Length: 264
Image 1 (cartoon, rainbow, N blue to C red):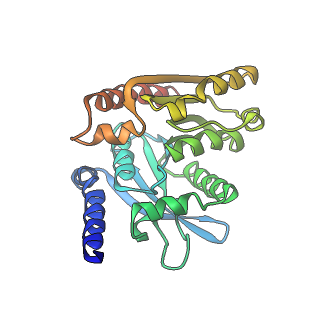
Image 2 (tube, rainbow, N blue to C red; image 1 turned 90 degrees about the vertical axis):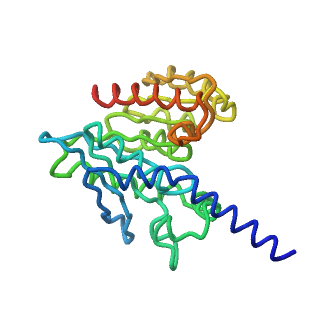
């Protein structure tokens, strides 16, 4: 019985790994310059994946905040794709220096362990790390000094929250993430752009209240719900095996996010 359980566990782990093979292939085929850097955050180092566009002009820097499974191959692939559109992209690994022998997401034995670790992070640590990354991003020599943030799932929530305490970001793009409370909303300085899947009622149930609070506080909140798409549709839509609805939502979201970032 134990052997069967171990075989099933190994099969699940293999499926989890294979699920992002498409992202690894995209990364390996990219002609763009990719590098790993460390950003100092207090007494910790935040590992960050940075991708540069092939351009002769200084570019806006976009901070890409990962999902609740950490800095996965797909998030790095997204960073590379966005760099291909003319932006410098920095994707911090917020599981950096989590503990002994756990210095980055890839050190965790499974995505479930990474997820559990994500929810053990304190809000202050996440805030300090993202502030350190933004400060670094604003000073990249190839950058134009402008920084925006984009996040997915847990990262979408962090993107929304970052707008409450970091007033140097020019825009926050929130993909299927929840909003801060009323007090936090009052502190927002940057425009918020929401991206949601129609089949994601857990998140979407909070949109009316968020819209109400943002309006009352005089904040900019522009969102689109992509019907038929589910939670995490950007990642699932990237997968060649993804549904037609998720692929359509992904394509439309790419059009919208590029329009937003280019106008920022």
